[in-house]
Image 1 (tube, rainbow, N blue to C red):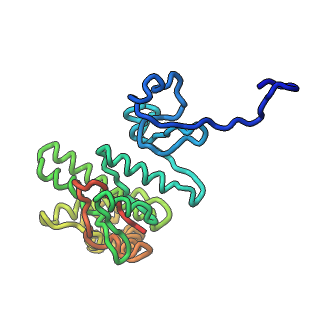
Image 2: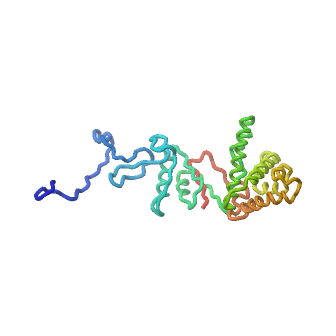
Length: 277
């Protein structure tokens, strides 16, 4: 209608009826000449709140196929109880159907354990009295380094050593609430080298073994502390590190890191969830 007396203008228009049809039945009407603006690449997430169009999206599809984003990452932010975990679960299910293996490496509540079980995946429980992780275990990378040998094996072994060192340093930082001192990282690195050279092949190193090396104080470890033959100087240098390692073994984290890894990740699993609730 038109504005003005007798123009028949209506202030409210009923929304038109929406129909769904296949491209064969609606040929000529689909695809539309002008898009609705809703992305159609990725996992179907629901309907557009205003247009009713299907909205799709996930960080992998938007990065690899649609190239909407420059790296495959997603930051989810929202008020409690509004569906953040539900949305991520929907993405996990949709991506799993395309061949992607979802890895949930720290499920706090848990939010995703049931989904992973429904997908036929592996759920690993970690916590006090439930299951543990051996941070000194090099895992498949260490085994591959031994199997490869040569320069390539040495390079892989060095990378393995660095990762184990960083993991222990991260745990100490969590227990202390501050980073390690530089000389402590050197002491820790030498202790790990000493352990690996003197541990029989096939035996897994444990954090208590690391404490034993610090307590014994072999010559190569003492050399890093600049003790100059004075045992009291050595103890002053390593005692803070010793106390922090004791805090990892029997502190806020319990015995989670005191023994061998209870369950290893299955590389053939359709999905993996590490439940730390």
